[in-house]
Amino acid sequence: MTTPHEAAGFGAGSTATTPTLQVSDLHKSYGGNEVLKGVEFAIDKGQVKAVLGPSGSGKSTMLRLMALLEPADRGSIMLDGTRIGAATQNGKIVHHSERRLAVQRRDIGMVFQKFNLFPHLTALQNVVVGLTDVQGMHKTQARDVAFQMLTKVGLADRDGHFPSELSGGQQQRVAIARALVLNPQVMLFDEPTSALDPELVGEVLEVMENLAAAGMTMIVVTHEVRFARRAADEVTLFDSGVIVEQADPTSFFENPQHERTKRFLSHVH
Ligand SMILES: Nc1ncnc2c1ncn2[C@@H]1O[C@H](COP(=O)(O)OP(=O)(O)OP(=O)(O)O)[C@@H](O)[C@H]1O
Ligand SMILES: [Mg+2]
Image (tube, rainbow, N blue to C red; front, side, top):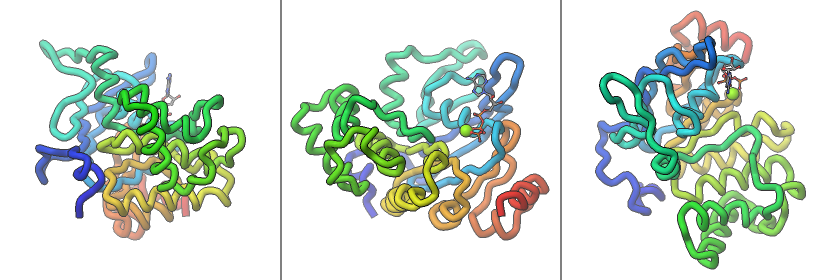
């Protein structure tokens, strides 16, 4: 199957053995608080990984580092076999310039718990700005492309609405469209449905499941066990700054190997 990325010419040069995104020995501290303690993580093209874990364990921090929104203290992030974000010189990590980071960030889409839409822009304009300002696309073409993406997330009839005129589920779908329209190689989701009323969770999960089925590479931090079971290729338990367990959904939920995972699942179920 040809994924939208392949059709768009992305991923050229990648082989079956090169993960789309791979982090190694990732460390991050805030003050004296060591939040990430050597995270090892890899995701292959077209894979969907669900990440579960207790509050404060460092899940959001891990995603922010992967999205190059914050610098790592140590370790590396590889996108399609190329290191991004920083280089190592004489054993020390040297972060790339803000300008270079801005270019690298285009390949990584991120969706946050709180949609972060521009309140003074309509749904369509929220999707258009990335295309015009980041990609330099002409406004007329950008509007067409953005409208197609809004249609894909089921919001063709809401293009002229401002965020304050949209439900939480609709706002989150605009946020997903805004990230997708830039054609990222990988999409990171940080608890995308946690801020939603229960009856709005389904419409956002449906968009994400469609995306997964279309071959998007996705890392999804979530509490939604249903989503993890249905859409994920692999489920990960994250705790205290490290990955504790990774397995296919059936093994993870039915036959977890680690005591920590069993304890965590006993609270979730
Ligand atoms: N910018 C920051 N400055 C200082 N401490 C931070 C910062 N960001 C996160 N932390 C701390 O890092 C730890 C991990 O936070 P993080 O948000 O990554 O956890 P999380 O697993 O996403 O939790 P939750 O499930 O509640 O979203 C917490 O102790 C938090 O207080
Ligand atoms: Mg978080």
